[in-house]
Length: 253
Image (cartoon, rainbow, N blue to C red):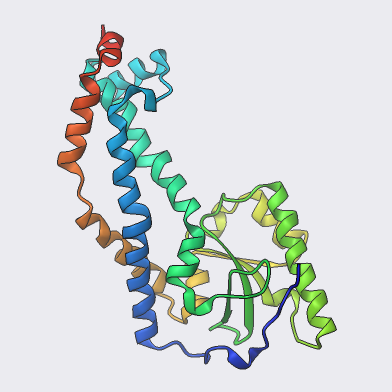
């Protein structure tokens, strides 16, 4: 596969305008609404079917009592549905849509370099960064570390051949949310063993935009989608429908 590194001549200016920051916030809000919230609602509506769950009768009865103080059909339905819609379902959806995030939210930073998602001028040190984007602090495994390091090493080698300035400090993994203290051991290996930067959460967005408050503005902007995505009444209907199924009624007896 041919790896291309684009020279700096076409890169953006160092200072990001307020209009550009606002556009990123709008893009992120729209991406979340279309890619995450809408799919979340679709997945929630499927949960009227007991076959959607791998039901452990011992734990389910326990959790129903733990949650509501009884194990009637509605309580069992809640014990099954709440963890799915508030945890695994949307978390998985968020991670699998990271490439769409790159294309729809950060399209102006898109890269043609193999193994790189975005390229940007670091608003802190002024140098161009080649960045592979990840969603959260626990989203890679051992093999991913070697793959990332391999991509970065190839870029450095090619830059030398083409007489371009690309060093270890110019290659980084950017994580769109989280805190440095939450980084998994796999991410820490990228830094400790291979000496590439891992920038996460507020630091990543600060370096991208030059605005140290941008990360919190982004969280607030996406949070506004929740106001539009109020699923309270529909969720009550899903719970009631699941609770009416014979499998759930039998479990409560």
